[in-house]
Length: 269
Ligand SMILES: [Zn+2]
Image (cartoon, rainbow, N blue to C red; front, side, top):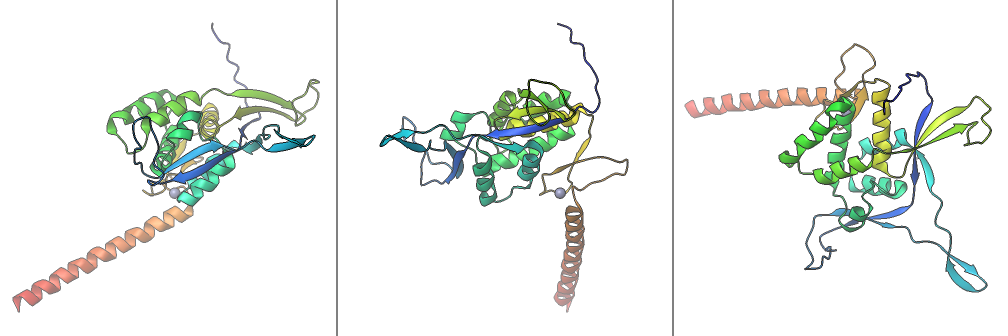
């Protein structure tokens, strides 16, 4: 089929994560993961389980109630928050708020992700924002033989599953049968964090946005390039921190040099 592509500017579109509550825990070596053979010791992993279904009383009998209603969260806000995560506590709070991280449900319940995997995700999201979509597959495939230290196979499968979305058209703030009104919106829905963040990046590419990745080595964030003025850092904070580091580095070198010189002088005397 040949698609007729309409280039319509200014389509109001939003990404929403319809989050089902999951309970995430950080499990250490002590809580070995049992396989059919024997427990394997693993580094600390974030492992999920679905939130228990609340019980309701009906005529004196306890019965499982209706499943919890999913909560809606804004995709872009999730992306910004995810790129800021640093500590285990940050990650736990984030995961417990948004539920499923990817569509690899069984993987998240049994094996789970390590913190290095989430750091890997930050790097991959930044690269996907920076690179043209036609180079994404090559980029992800190029990581495989490098053994980057994070679960690249998990990342690749989650991205593969995370690129299909449901779209709901909203008129007057709600999906309606009568299409009257001016407040219209195409609402792209995701049920997991990866799909939600991925969708925001894909929309950015559709609207032709260009991104750069922060030059501070320990900052994974990416930022939109909106002017011709070249920009290296995601924020004033990162730019400042790097300049402080450079100054300190120079001072350290200077001190080391003068120490060497004075030692040489002592040696001569
Ligand atoms: Zn930065």
